[in-house]
Length: 81
Image 1 (cartoon, rainbow, N blue to C red):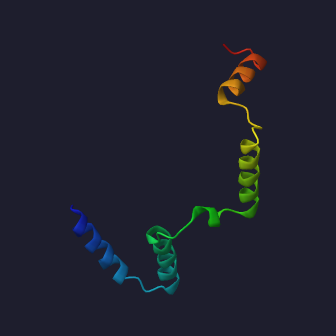
Image 2: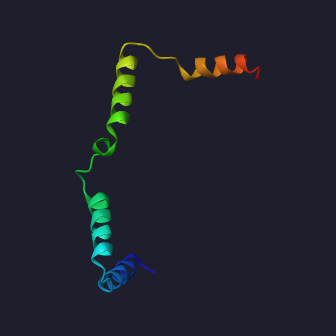
């Protein structure tokens, strides 16, 4: 089935919807999927934004440990080779 046919089938199914609640759910879905202005950052809870900001600040200040060092420490701690 080609793309145009699939879209037509979806339109036909859409036209059969009689529930305002279902239409509202679809509207919300389309707004998220189609909007180019959608910023994932704005959808994150404030707590998550604060943690990311704090982590970026620590990274800029050099307060980081490389992945290689973390793996090395874990292997030593748990006696993994």
